[in-house]
Image (cartoon, rainbow, N blue to C red):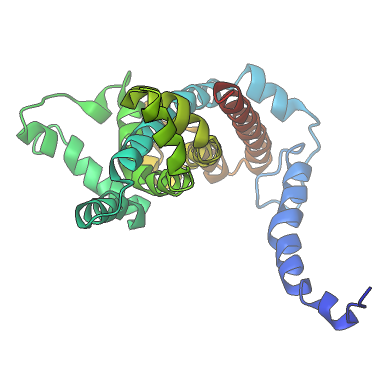
Length: 282
């Protein structure tokens, strides 16, 4: 076996140092602060044990409301973005000048910043002079407490559907043409070809889209602040903005506990989605 020069082991050191400094160490400190009442400024603080987590689970109505909003947001974004991106990919999978132009058009919103997208959709939703109002639709949209978070989810779908479309197009291009030829020979309709060939074969792409979309849904911080204000109203509050508000209120220990719960929720939802996707694709 060829011996690896000792100097090669030095190459990962800078990346490892950055990872330890900016990820591992803050994560460990976050766990330490989560069991305290530290306000972020005082040189001293008290250990409160698991009381922060107990309050989050039993007494924090704002966190519970933010979680409810986030799950609604997640549901709309995951279903809407996955379905729309797959539909666009199926329609634009074939290479042509028209499809290339449309791919670029649908991908364009992805390169915009979240703040820019928020300003665009604030204009669209404006009840007085917004685009929807000009088209003859009327409604308060972001002003309706019952549906405000769902309208933010629509903006999120528009924002990232083109990005997920590219993932699906890559998956569709890996499907052997012979499978479709065999299906047509057996008399399969276009829907049957999609159901029995396309859908099972894009399972890896779907798993990636679901995981990425889930993380996007929980991290839609800039978009929510841009549409809902700083801090956002409770009907527009999601977990990331709730944690941000808690930090801004100088409750660092409590916010650290919220962050840990937040990461556990993301891990659980992502695992459930991946498991469901595997079961759906057989």
